[in-house]
Image (cartoon, rainbow over all chains, first blue to last red; front, top):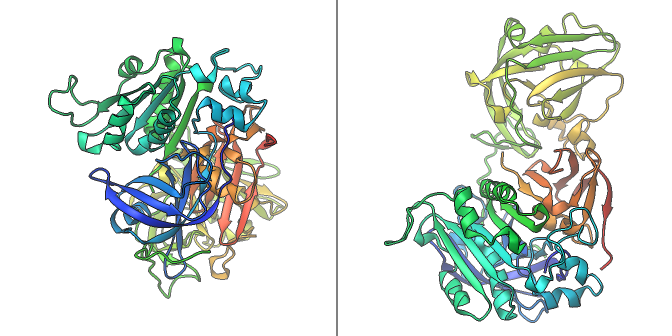
Length: 286
Length: 196
Length: 85
C-alpha cells in the first residue's frame, strides 16, 4: 500500500531506554518504551531530542525498525542507530545511552516512505483505495499514473538499502510477514562487510516465513568465505540482475546515504522503472 | 516536557571575551549552504556592479590586476559560532566602487546559484568589505564561496555572500534571501540582530 | 554539501501543521512541476532548512527556527494540495 496510508497522529513523547545492544561493530539497537506512543506504520521515522544540563538541545531523525499494528497498543519502539564519526547525537545513542535513560521522541513521522498491507490502507481511507493502489497521487487519471491497473495486493515490492538504510525495511518486511501478505517482497542490501549486516537473525526468520520474502546481499569491501562474487560496489548491471524486472511493475523503495540513493535511483530510471513508482529516503551524516 | 538526558553534554561550547553576545568559538570552519555548491569556472567568472545607469564588469584577469589587500578579521555566524583572526586576501569594495556613480544607498549582492543578501552601501565602504579569492593563503574552496566571495565581517556572516557575481544598487533596503525568510534586515552581531 | 529529501521535513513541520506535509503536493512557481514534498530536495543547516524543486532547483520553501520562534516561507509554491483525512 502506498500513496495515502493511514498513519497515527504524531506528537512529542518521553522515551525510556529499555535496552541498548550492539547491532554491528558501529551500530546499536535501542529498544525504547515510549509513553503514549500511538503506534506507527512500517517505514516511518521519529525525531530524537536530547537536552544538555545547560538547556542546549540536539535533534536528529531515525527510522523506526519496529512496526506495531498502528493501534496504539504497544509502547515498544525499536531503533537501530549507526555511529556517525564526530556526530552529536548518534555517539550518545550508541555509546552512552543505557537502560533507564530518558529523552524525548517526536513521532511517528512521515507518511510517504511507508508500506502497509493492502487491507490496512483501504480500511483507513475508504474511497481512496483504488487511487492508492495504483501507486501515487497521480494514479487516478494523471499523466504519470504508474504501472497501470495493478492491485496493491499483487504489486510486488523491491526494497533497496545501503548500510543503515535497511532500518525502515526490517519494519516493512515484518509488517508484510505479520499480515501473511502474499505480495512478493525482495530486499537488495548493500553492506561493507558481513559484520555490518543489521538484523541478520530477523531477516533469516523473515525469509523462512510464509509471506514471500527474499534477501539479496551485496558486500562492498569484504565478503564471507566462499561468497560467489568478490566484494565490490553495486553497479547498474548488478542492480538490474538483483531487482524485480520492470515487467513486474514493482513498487521500489530506496534508502541510504544521499550518494547511494541518487546513484541507485538514476539507474532504476535508466533501467526503465517508472519514476512515480520509486520512493526514496536519504540520510545525512551530522 | 523537556528534561535533561543523563550523559548528554552536546558539543563543547567555548566562550571568549572577544566574542559578541551569544557566540561561541570554533576552530574548524562550518559550511552553511542553502543549495548546491555552484561550479564556477574562472574563465567564465565575472563580477559586476550594476547601477541605475551603468554596469561595471571585471573578468577574472581584470579582477586579479586590481590592488589586493590582506584582511585579518574575526567572523561571526548567526548560528552562534565565531572564528577569530581569519585571513583573507582580496579587493576592497572602496577600490571596486571608485568609479561607480549612483544615487542609490543600498546594495543587493547576488551570487552564482541564486543567493541574495542586502547591505547598505555605507556599510560596504571605508574598509568594511572585500571581495576575496583566498583564505589562509590558498585559493578559496568552492564550499567556502570560491572562486570569489564577499566578506562584510562586521555583520553576521550570512551577509558575506559566497560565490558573489554582482552587486546591484537599489533605492530601498529590500531584503535578500534569508532576510525575507526570518533573518534580520541589518544583522549586527554586537546588537544580536539575528531575526526580524 | 549533501542534501536530503522532503522526508526530512516531517518532524519540523508536524509542529505547525495538522496534516503530514511530506505527502502534501505542491506546485513549483519556477517550473510548474507538481510533486509531493517528500520528493523535494532539502538542504539543512543550523541557519535553516531550504526546500528546492527536484525538477528545476527553485526554492520552494524555507524554515528558520530559533527557540520558541519559527519562520515558515512558501515563496516558491503557488499552491499546496492537502487531502481531507
